[in-house]
Image (tube, rainbow, N blue to C red; front, side):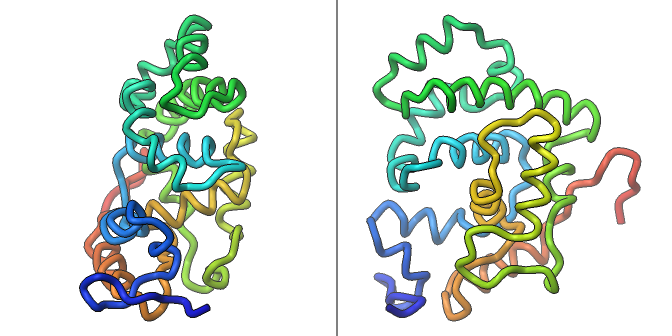
Length: 208
């Protein structure tokens, strides 16, 4: 099996995006493009946690349901959730009804608040873990040195459902690791987006 397939426009794409029609748009417009928005970063970490043991196709198909159920992943709102919200979410057939994962989102929202108070933003913290070219894993790897380090630090801070594999998928999706196949037409688009992307500034660190 090759690393790419021919897309509907005749250009090569990563092989995995041909598995289902929903993947193509996600692959072409989101996966691997850098993100500095705290809400989107938090959402993706949460959804990657929900994916654990499932397929991304399942989560992607339910993404709008997740957004509706979890107040668009606004961490400050989720941090105020109570047991009544857990019960509401467990009764919502539009999402993955897993108590541990639901409770992890609420816990992680509170931990994210702590992190933002300390670091200034979730984005500044996450992008501090961007690996350099010399430490990138082979394409298709399930983990990386960066994901192992970030996973360890998040767990130390009290986060849940943030194992190295989950975090590696997050780093790939949010543009910290460009894992598009070498001959994928979108790889260079993602690379160009990273070149013009301004890395979020950490608290107390001057820009430039």
